[in-house]
Length: 186
Image (cartoon, rainbow, N blue to C red; front, side, top):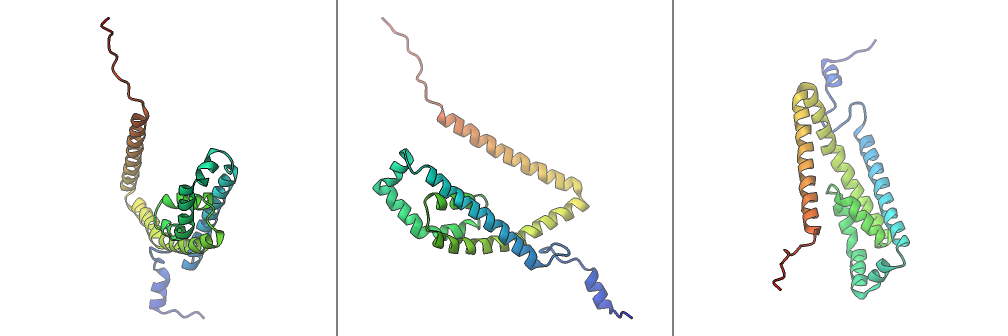
């Protein structure tokens, strides 16, 4: 015999909430997000180390051996770990920061501490806000699919316009200035 109360039955039927994936505990989603970002960031760091090793001779190595560059690298190695952690609050910058940390050979111990803190922050943000955004998009798509398509097309149009403007600006700034031809009056 199975006894249930109306409160238990209502609780079982309620959705899990916007910060969860139905049927998956929060800690599982958080751990998965943490693992994904940890592997991705580590791969980027080690790719930077590989590039540094590949460019250890030549003009790049000569430029990094100059006193000014050595001072910058020392500052990055000293103050770079907070930049690594803070980069996880951004979108797109974290890849560049992790690559630079590897390329500039930030000591792995310092990098790892900063990375673990950054991964914890990133996983927290994406497990809460990111999951809520996905769930909201699904809800809008189920109730108003035309609205979701319009918002998606608007986002694609905005990104396309920004890319177009940036590439056009880059192309116009890289073209050499051509002086108007003058006729010889001889």
